[in-house]
Amino acid sequence: MPRLTALAATTALLAAVGGTAVAPAVSSAATVAPAAANAPVVRVLPLGDSITFGRSSCTGNGYRGPLQGLATAGGRYALDFVGSNRNGVMDDYANEGHPGFTVDQIGQGVDQGWLAARPDVVLLHIGINDLNQGANGTDTAARAVALVNKIFAAQPGVTVIMQGLIGASTGMNNPMPVNLSANMDAFNTRLQQEESVQQQAGRHFRFAKAPTLTPAQMNDGLHPNDAGYAVFAQGFATLLDQTYSARWFTGSATQLARPSDAVRLVGLKDGRLRNAEGDFAAGQWSSWNDMGADGVTEVTSAATFSVNRIFAVRDGKVFEKDGDYATGQWSNWFEPSFADALPRKAVAVSASALNHALHLVVIGEDGHLYNADADYEAGRWTGWTDHGGNFKRVTSATTTDGVNHLFAVDATTNQVMEKDGDYCAGRWNGWTASGPSVVTAQDVAASASGRTVHLSAVTANGTLVRTDGDFAAGHWSGWAQMPGSGITRVTSATANGVEHLFATSGGRLKELDIDLAAGTMNSWAEPAGGADAQSATAAFTR
Picture 1 (tube, helix red, strand yellow):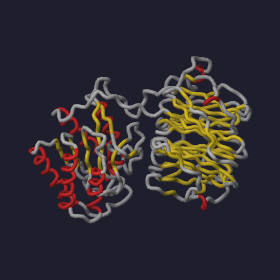
Picture 2 (picture 1 turned 180 degrees about the horizontal axis):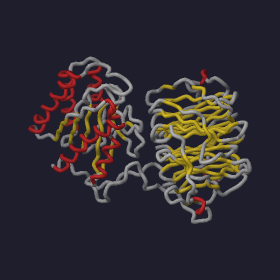
Picture 3 (picture 1 turned 90 degrees about the vertical axis):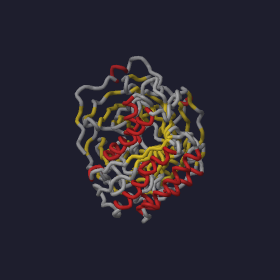
Picture 4 (picture 1 turned 30 degrees about the horizontal axis):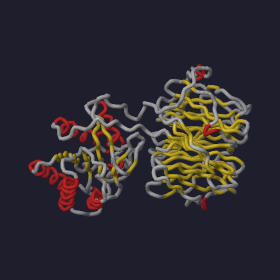
């Protein structure tokens, strides 16, 4: 990965230190710009298997992200995706894509209520798992027709748009698992014939043959990469426009939901943890609650969608506690499956997440930095990787392109060092000095928005400096000194265009909020009514 260069000019934040305080609110910035103000909202259920889910998409958006962008650019209607599953960095990540599911398994899901959201349109892509498991193309097509009939029986009047199986192509990373071409052709031909049958019965059904993608547009023999998903989205976009023009669906005036703006804050004091919830859209905090842990020396957290996952170090071991804010359920403290394999006792810890993937980094008692990765959708952890070094503090942030950026304070020089892991490309770079220029620190914090990392460092004299690393453009802003003094620890979390810094000073927990678009900030204040703390961690659930 290329080294980021420094911008000569500092950000507008320095000029705003004495400026107007801002109250953080839900930003209008989103992954995809909103459609025209008066555009009707069309409820769309993406239904299928791993391709609907977005497998092998670095962002997790799959075809849904490009499709939403095309609809937004057209301005005729806005898409509101529905479904019980979640994947993608886009704000509207709902879908009903289930990796590995066959046609019959998807049919069982329809029986169990997957149409409960009453979509205007069902986008259907199914069948490849049947064929990949040896099923006949004609028989699989017959089951797919039965599924289409089941959808219309469950919701008469719905529009069903189906794209055929993607033309077989050897992918960049893996060969095609089996020669599926003949069975895929039989499947696609039968469903193409079904289009006129369904329409003659008065049903709103369209079918389009999927594009044959090039090897550069495939990640493996079955799944596109992001470039391939963008091409695949075009097919759905064309049929959506045609069926909307035919008035098969009209949408409604329902407003699109805003993304969540709730931070989950955990404070550490004298070995005990307490948590509080900050709802920035409503402008209010909850009270503090004890988390039932003692003897804790370090804590970190990261959210995978609605679940905040908290990792605490006690007696050199790492423990986890998960809170699902969609269901209101909390787990007990437990040792994750990697616990016994941790090479050294842990002295510091950091976590960051993207979609269902969580990246945990630990500094061992030997000063080395170790990392392990969890896939909560698949329910598994990797083993530990030793990244070497001699560090005392660590922070991390994962950008929306799937790159995990590690920032660690060298135990000897106090210099902030950086190492980046590109999980989409499957490679790490080496340790380098981080930021626009060399800085020494006693603590660091990082959070991300898009492909930009917001990095803060507590200097030896207790002041706080910060910089923004734009990894898409390849540069850092200059270090900007923040107000305040006597700071010992810092953490940060960013959502909806606002970076929230939480720092400890004088044994108290303080908060400073930065509107990244406006370049303004408010003053330091005590969150959740105030609390004593030695350190803290914060994460936004989605």
